[in-house]
Image (cartoon, rainbow, N blue to C red; front, side, top):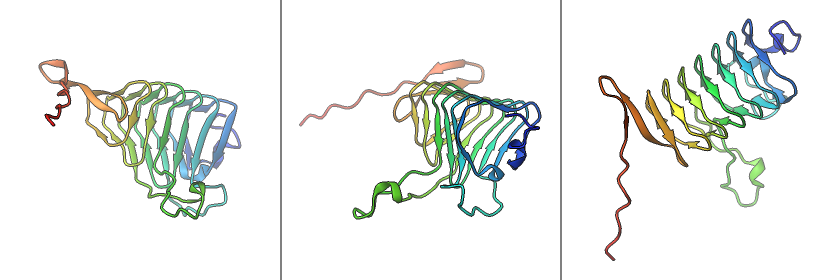
Length: 193
């Protein structure tokens, strides 16, 4: 799908030179999604704004994908409140980004029918998310961040760092004048009990 296709005209914006590769499954809430210029989104994408195509979301943009981004095949971007992906963000395949999870507070209602609190997600310009990365509600990834394959981002990652693991933890940082330095994670303190 390119910017001149009938389907692309349903988006809040679909930038020149951008494309979503086929097949696309599922895709809805287009009028609440902005795709910047020169962005390529791989096949088998799941991209949605809201819970269902019939949901009334008002006029708000819920998903904003910047210019010159590359989203890997089989990835999912599911927004209920706000997902903001900066310019020049690249992802590996099978990356999942969401700003909401299912709730489970009521044991008499199936978990799939309960909705938890939505919290905005942002991914700074120039960042890279490795294969299989999961970005959860409330995550804020800074600029020029590398997130290692298979990592789960649950909180804040500062600008110019490398983070890995579940949950993702910073293992390297760029320090002006010193370059990239390893961040030492203290070993777990053993109990004397």
